[in-house]
Picture (spheres, rainbow, N blue to C red):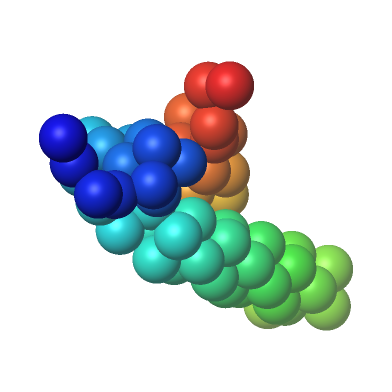
Length: 78
């Protein structure tokens, strides 16, 4: 008895199951890019002979692993 188009209804139900999916994917992409850029800068500092704290390098490597992994798990299951 509903006047809603079945395709629109399916899309709305999908959105209620995974709200803000587009925004989350944009954030994961931005965070991943930032992590890889930061790692590139750290590696260039190491190559130039500067000393870096090992903790900072591990944090950057962790970010380079975590954010693309979150992007991978946030993909469509279709």
